[in-house]
Length: 215
Image (cartoon, rainbow, N blue to C red; front, side, top):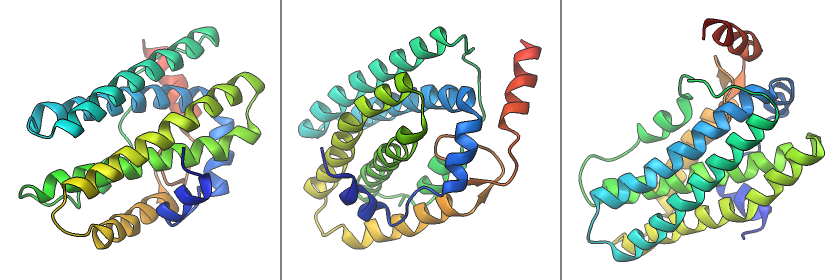
């Protein structure tokens, strides 16, 4: 697993304290969105496997990654069951769509960009686990600590694949995504999600409560 300092250097910014404070007041919502993130991560890996059939190293890595992400999904669901938290639909964060807005449309450039986006998503997940752990209850902190190694490895896998399959250096491209990623993390956000920016309104709990009543 890469050291957390390496991940923070890759990301160009830390999670704002304001986000952590809102997360700690909305643990139920945090876990629900975390479950969605794990499922989406598995889906992303599978999508790459279906679209790019001739990259054997990528197929192997994404197959392993998808299995691990689905296991994490199951583990989050179990934690939610133990805490009597209902798994609900949530609107997606702006984070992934914001990064994907930079994707080039031609191949193989789009493929390389997708791998770079994957590296940022996994790196930010790892950094946020680390930011949350000191403040969580013992059971949840233990679980998030157990995820640090795999999320860090996933970040490395995506980045290594991008370097492997690109026919030119990718550092400038990484910088472009890093600038956008930092903007998405440090600017005000209308919703609280696992990968959201700084929530301008702590309305996550109210939104979650109203949805529970409607089901």
